[in-house]
Image (cartoon, rainbow, N blue to C red):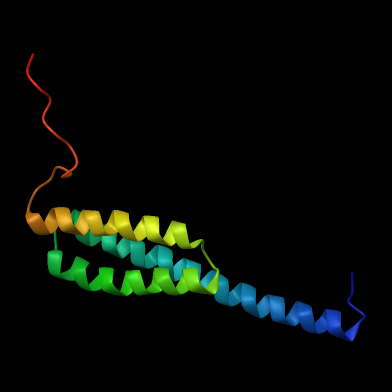
Length: 103
């Protein structure tokens, strides 16, 4: 269906630009997340820390622009922060697990 109205053509052009920008940002978020998780698997604290700072900024910016929900961004940042904290402490178990009482 060909667009005939001038404002419809303009809106279509704008939506294509926004779609391209949004796809790029979401793709870069996924790439940065994968890089962070690889650094965590390798237990490379310094690399993971530097990637984490950029990742937090990218998630916050995407949430403020409406690309992802702010609670989704917060959830992802919290999970990655916990993983970074665990490897920086040198433990492999999450801190939330407690010992079961002996009966």
